[in-house]
Length: 306
Image 1 (spheres, rainbow, N blue to C red):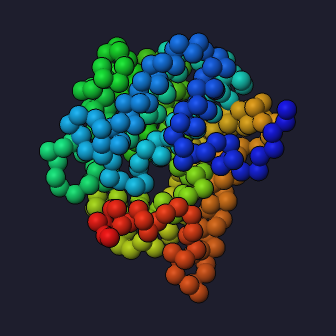
Image 2 (image 1 turned 60 degrees about the horizontal axis):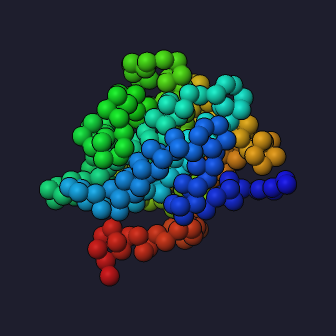
């Protein structure tokens, strides 16, 4: 039966973790044995516990941009790109796909603070969170159901999400492993920028940048304006550095939903076009034009307001 979709957000309820997991599992099951997904599911459950503050030795996630929902966005986008690649090219080995999915789940755990860390929030680790994610993996791999032999491959994939990292400097074991790294790097970008609450979430990215001491962000409006420059730079990255692997999403949408369109790019362009309108309209405060998500409620939690 043909399914009509007009927006990427209509694919799956991205605010429902179990629905995202179900969707990823369904995609995985098109090609691989469901028994192999058990390892991924264990990593998913442990990652969720970590972000929820239920993992021994660590606090709950206290960054509202790089939170568990951002991880889920990247996780789902990763699965969609894998599906598209498998359709258009050749089947990726199941071992690499398992490592890739686990890397997607763990790529931002570097934002999580240890219990003994009482200074600020995890946002202060913005500029070295990728390295911290790799270190976390090396310390806790067993509890996540990951074999010690997979630490290096998963670490290599995670490193591809670092915007300052040169992929050519990463020692991949094979060209296919390189492809999985590029997939995650791309999925990390597509997942966050296509989210229907992306513009609202930028305010929380501002708070993260401010705490991390990243220059150029003195006011909330700075992150709104600077996102246009980021968009141009990031499109160059996914096209040149990540070899335009985002095109494989089209094969997924076409085969699974009979839509010959990259819904990721459509959603991103819609967000950027609305962002331009916000910047051009100075008749009212830009915050009044950001209506999705519970911004004020999250700010109360972030700043301890009642």
